[in-house]
Structure formats: C-alpha cells, structure tokens
Length: 285
Image (cartoon, rainbow, N blue to C red; front, side):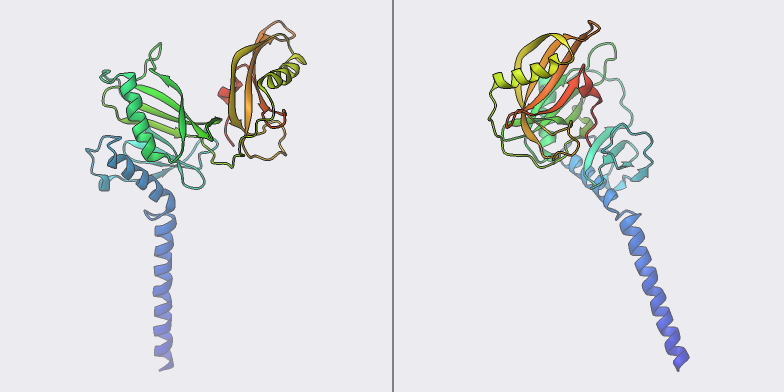
C-alpha cells in the first residue's frame, strides 16, 4: 500500500515537474517568451495599419532570435528575425528597430510630401509620444536609395530632445515602411526654467570656445532643446532645457572648426559640446 502511494506521489511529482519545465520553456525560450511576443505584437500592429505588405498570412510568420554581432546601437539588447524582416528590441523588449531584409530598386511613384503623410500616420500607431520633424531626405544622389527617410525628434513642453531620434524609411514605390529606428530613452525631464537670456547663453558659449580656438563667429540660429549633462558623468541624467549655440572658428592649427555648445537655460552651465560633426558619433546610453 505504501509502495503504491509512493508511486502515485512520485508520478504526480514528475508530471508537475514536466508541466513546469514546459511552461518555463514556452515563456522564456519558446513562442510565449516576452521578446517573441513583443516582435509579434509589433508585426500585428504593422499589419493592422497596412504599413507593410500583408500578402503573407500573419499567423504563418516564424520568429527566431538572432545573434547580435558588433551592433553599433548600444540600445539593442536582442534581435528577432522573420523571413522578410528584422526587429530590434531594447532590454525592456520595446521595439527600437525594424527593417526589411532585402530592399530592391524600384520606381518612384510616391512624392516626398505624400511619403511624409504616410510616415506620420504609421508613427502615430507605433509610438505614443509628441514628436517634431527634424529632417526629410529623398535619398537621391551618388547612392540613390529606394526609400525616403524622415527623422523625428521626441518633444516635451514644446522643446525637442536633441539626441533622441525616431527614423522612418518609406518605400518610394508602394509607400510601405522599409525601416524604423527609435533611440528615445524615455528619461525624466525637468520643467523648462528660463533664467538665462539668449545673449547670456551666447557669451557663455563664446567664452568656452575661445579658450581653445580663435576667430569665433556665433551663428544666428539659436535653439532651445532638451539635453542631459554629458560632461559631468556624476550629474543627474534628467534632461533639461538648454540653449544650443553653434560657433564657427579656427583651431590652433588654423583648421576650420564647428562647435555646438549646450548651455543650461536654468543656470548657464555647459552640459555638452559637440565638435566638428561629433553628433554623428553619439550613441545614446
């Protein structure tokens, strides 16, 4: 009798362990894993708004994890691939990148303005936040591309976030979304405090520039933007409103230089300096 009870108990325990293992494999490695779910949900949303070609049955799409080798985007934590697309996720499984695997040359049937309308329609469905257009590129030139590129910047309280960008590539022939990338960090931002005038900000930036350079000329365009302190590594990472002052001049070797200096509108501290196009190398952290 005791042996039978022991056998029943052992069998029940074994079944429970198998069920637990199956659940763990499903939720963490299989189709129920959070990263796979996030990729599926994103694809479902793109299908629902006709942002991509929907000829393939949504349920037949297979998702696989892809190894990340030497990614230039430090935000990318994991990549999921399907037969036709790649999807990048951050550590919280937010979609921060999407791209068509093969982009073939095509015929331009959609103009830039219509493509922008499509881009903003797609963006409203995949990103929940206020944005402002930073640039639009028809990608015509030496390396002509089959899509238009639109770069948007996150915006809060009417001020753009200089380092946070959202890029959409719109196919010139069919208007579908060929690519999407999102470097917004969703960090906390302070309420705008404007204690410093434009002239004061210019003087502060100019003084800093002239410590290392000469023949300084401040450009007329002066912008208020959100940025964080990238000079003092121990400072709070909360975004605050700054004046963006651009100065042209020459260094000690008489080479032309351009500095973009971010001056806090609250206290006049310099939070960041971009030298000679260094913003192209900035990676959000």
